[in-house]
Image 1: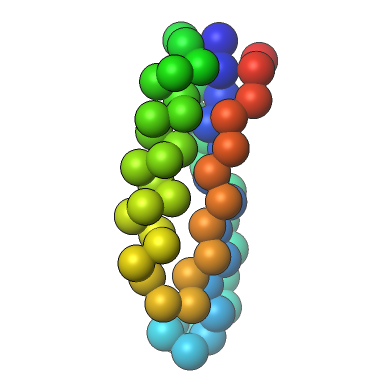
Image 2: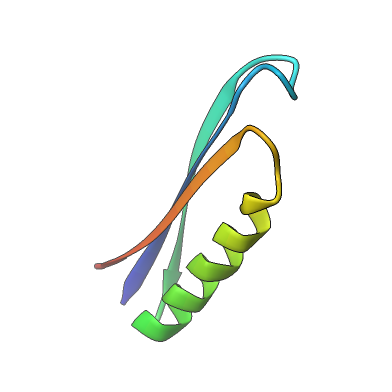
Length: 59
């Protein structure tokens, strides 16, 4: 079992207030976890002043 951890921070330039969030999702294989992490990184890379980190760890 693998867990995807997504941590995200956005500063106040593009939101009403600075905020951060952390979310997790479980995957049965490392490969599916890594694919999901790559998709999330790509999605958030396009947003200005939003910093996102997506990592997979073994449960």
